[in-house]
Image (cartoon, rainbow, N blue to C red; front, side, top):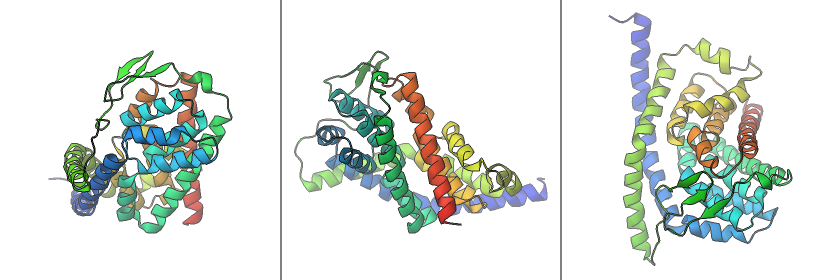
Length: 319
């Protein structure tokens, strides 16, 4: 027999698990389809060509906007970034694209709407995009161009990166697309959406399980001691804590919803999401092929700073 408190907590966790599955799975399937459409009409090579001609300033705005609407995984984002830098794009412009890409995308937007509502989602998108633009402008002024490793983009259709660290094949996408009808694009997007959903479902379920256990089993007092308003370092700690537990953005958001449901301030929760999405271990491993250590640390510090700013802003606006 389980202790009464633990048994009731597990029952509460199970009920919350069902709630999140019913809420998030349909949203995730819809978001996966939008991702497929975006990849059909905005393949990485087209994005790279579109950004190459922009200068600093307006180019940072364009780069952040393109980063937000292109749902590339890290191993697609990094080759686009390498191509931009190889073509002579300013480092700051490339950074605006790099910062916006993991933080704002179709999946994040739809899941945020489902979990936190339209108001929170709009604030999140606006603040992160502005932060990506400003972050890129600041980094562009630091004179860190020599911190970029020697990079060569190969001619194979997977757009692999060749650096002094070796080669890295890109993930899905990047294949040469012939001219297709709109119907063919939609059919291809639907197939890709289902494949993407099946591949990502384990991470989504893992995030839901963790979120459900936090909701039903982890004592509220423990969470509030670490991440509550009484701790002045709660927001930066949340931004740092996201990285080691990150599995995917779709898996992070159910955990974020559970933390919010346990009374953690929404800004602190979103700082956790931003830190995990931007400074995840897989992302840093890939960027290590492109950046020297100092620039890699600047990137990680910028993401944590953005997470802290996002969190503090939300906590001030939505008290």
